[in-house]
Structures are given as structure tokens and as C-alpha cells.
Image (cartoon, rainbow, N blue to C red; front, side, top):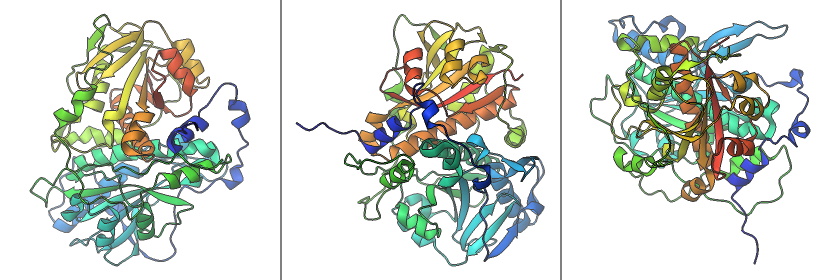
Length: 513
């Protein structure tokens, strides 16, 4: 009887794991002369300068309707992916953006599709973060093509604008090779987290769409599919114009599951896998289903690791105070930086609770949060574990976090500082952090439900959660840093996480040095 092969998503995950025995053989010399430029340029088109409209959210919007409209759009794009810093070097300077990126490589591009508003003509735009402007490179109405590519998603019936995030694969693969695919979608999740919050700051409401016909959407944006691919579509409803609640529909659609694939050489796995996760234009999605009530979706996870003998700690917390109109949130988004070193000092249990509350209870912060608000793709597939090394008021050990019950459940009892240093490839961040958050998922089960495309959804959701931890930590004066490189299998062994759980992302928390 022939052996049943795993799906291409599981194969990719296994092939791109870091292992102590093989890590050295996978390292390669970085040719700095060939590093891809992290900005896209167009030679034909017109520009809309957004800099004159960049205002503080505390400032009153202009009385002139057109100026006020441009102020909101300018702030939305700047808080999502604008330049927030520059590091001089002997060559070209390194520009930093509002959303973090692994290695500072910034593979994402942001496009805006306009249906045609009183102030923004119909067509296609690329957000030029380097000079904070919109480049209008196609001036025909393409909204119907966008609807078709998204299988006539009902959200697009009543919205006038949509953001589309893409990935330029070579920017990240230049350094991380085939494993770059993981980091690309974690980066996309960071960006989606910023877009969600920036919309809340500026009276927009975002709706995620992860299920679309890739080829049709790439063609719509005039992308070279060998170099760049669409990642997510985010229609944004203008809350100052749209009074009714827009229909809430699923954000993730399934793809095929591929179990028959050739022997793929190193260096070609990323491109092959991306092609395999695409949805074909002829996919039979006759009607996009609505989201079930939140209570029904959350029940499945509420009893994970709920052993009668384990230590359980409530994480109920007072919400973080962001100030009137959430003004401090924008300031935090723009000054966020990844922490380079921790002091090894402890944080408090109250601080950890506040971090978890902001990350997992968004209805405490966003007024337009509704039952079933679609911030994520497959959030119920994500599990959260926290290795506690220095939290005042909490025993050392590894905990499972139950977001719906809002409690920590201890599953291992020891200090993991030495092991965390090892698991994070010898990075001191793992050793000196007060707590380390692990996001995982049962990949086999997720693939069975959503096909190989679920690998995208899982990593975007993990990155989205990581960005929430980032912003809350920075606001509280803590240090935060995400880690996408780790010894995969050893994480499960050391922390006692089931072997079926694929480790997606690590976020370290602590006192900055």
C-alpha cells in the first residue's frame, strides 16, 4: 500500500525548519551589492502628495470636506506603512517603517483600488512610503474586476476603496531563502494589525479578504507573478459616509490540498509553494457565507489544557488607557521599534495581563468592534503558549493562554531561560526576556479545513497578534521583539507543546536594557 504523502504546506513547513544539526549548512553569504531595493518605482503616472495632509489625530479635522477627507486617508496610510525613521550607513540609508519587518527587508507593497470617490478618481494606486504619496498608475474603473477576483464578496458591494497588500518575494528571500515565505506572511500580519488600528483612528472600518483568485488579482494590479504576489485585500468602509453595518462575511476561503508534487530543489521551494497555495479563477464559490456568532466560534477553544490540577491565573485586566480619541495609539505606532536587548529584569503580572487584554480583547478598544468583527482569518486555529521567566506575581514555567476564558493555565514548571536562549538560535533576547509568547497551530487539522492556503492565513494571524503585543508593550514602556528564526522541533520538546503544533512565531517581552 503506497505511503500517504503529506500536503505541500506540511512538506514546506518540515523542509524549512531550523535544526541544530543542519543550520550551519543552510547559512549562506549575503551579497550586499545584490540586495533588492525595498521600494517600488513607476515611470508613468501621476502623484497625489499626502504630506500636506499629515496631521496629529488630536487635531480637529479641517472644516473643508475635501481637506478633511485627505487628512484621514493620509494618516491611515502613514500609520500603516509610512517611514518613521532612518539609519545612516556607508551606502544607502536604511529606512524604518511603521510596521516591523524581519531583517528590515520590507517585502510588502500597499496598493489602493478606488471605485471613484468625490476626491479620489477611480483606478489603481501604489502607496509610495518613501515620499508619502499615492502614485496613480491606472485611471480606469476596475472595481468590477476586483469584485470578480474576490468571488463577488458582499463587502465590496458597499465600499468605495480597498487596500491590497502584496509581497515582493526576492526582498526577503535574498536573506532568508526558502524560509522567507514564513517571514513574508508574518510581516503581512504586522501590516494588517497596523491597518486595523489606523482605520479605527481615522473613522474607517476594515474588512479582511484572504480568499481571492490570485491570478486575476495579480493581473488586475499588473504584477509580475514570478516577482510579486497579492497577499490580502482590505476593503475600507468610510464610517462618516456609510451609516449601516456592512455584512459580516468569512475572511478565509479554502484552496486545493496538494499531496502529489515533484522533488523540489532548495531555492525553488518558496515559489513552488506560493503557486500551490493559490485559488484558481474557476473555483466554485457561489456565495460567500456569513460569519457565525462569535460565541459559537470561540466555544471550541475554551477548554484546551483545562486540567483540574493545573495552576490557573485569571488575566482579567483594566484596559490600557490610550487617551481621548486613542491619540496615544498613533504616537505609539510611529515610535515603535524592536528591542535589541533586555536587562533581564522582571515585569509585573499586571503588565502581562494588560498586554494580553489589548491583544486578544479588541472590543475593549475599538468602538466599531461588533459580534464577529473580522479582524483575522483563522484565529480559532491559533494557540498561545507563554514561557514565563520573570513575571512578578506569577510562577515560572510554561502556560497555555485561553483567550476566551481569559486565564493562564500552567503546563510545565521550571525556569526556561537557558533553553530559550538555545531555542532562539543563541539570541540573548530569548534568555533575558521576562516572558516569551509562542503562537502555534495544528497544521494538519488546519490544512484539512482550508487546504494548503491556510499556511498564509496562520502566519498572517500570528503576525497580527504579534503586532498587537508590540504596540501594547511599547505603550507600557516595555521592550518587545519578534523572532521568526528558531529551532522548530526543539520548541515543542522543551516547552511540552504537543508535537502536532507547528510553531509559527515567537514574541519576546521584557525590560529594555
